Image (cartoon, rainbow, N blue to C red; front, side, top):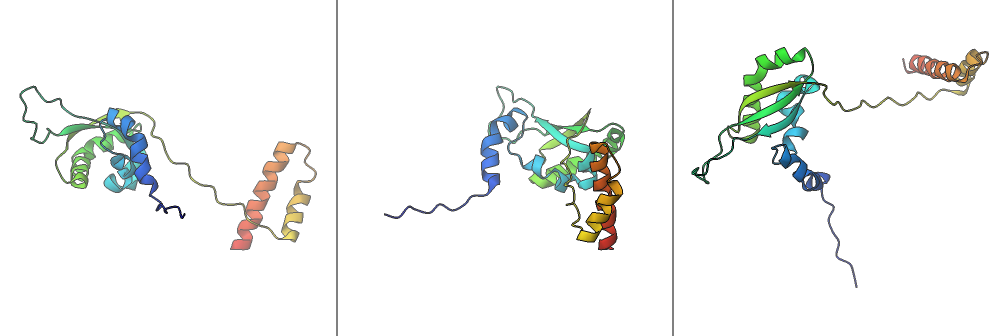
Length: 167
């Protein structure tokens, strides 16, 4: 008997399932604002900011359950001196977030200064040297006795010689 084939599902489908409890505690319905932050505010702002949480106002006991909630407060972590620029850009950021969601869900921003996590940049692969270039680098660092320094200078030599061969 043949096993039914299951179609592969995008990783994003699983991320929201796994992260939902944690995101809900921070006021996010899904991970989309965190993932789409650079698209919402632009690469420059995203490099120095990150959304931390959305604080929704609590509904009173006599509130209409069908009514849209009042606009929330988006708490954003901002690095050091960039906070002043972000303060001036707040109306634009609020508008961009609201346009992203399609309704006026954010009414104000609160800025918290602190370090912003950044994705690590991938290092370019080490250049592949020809046999003659590799021997030339090895002979240049051969007289050096300290292993750590020798290895560092060998990597530097490979990078310098490799960049010349690319040009």
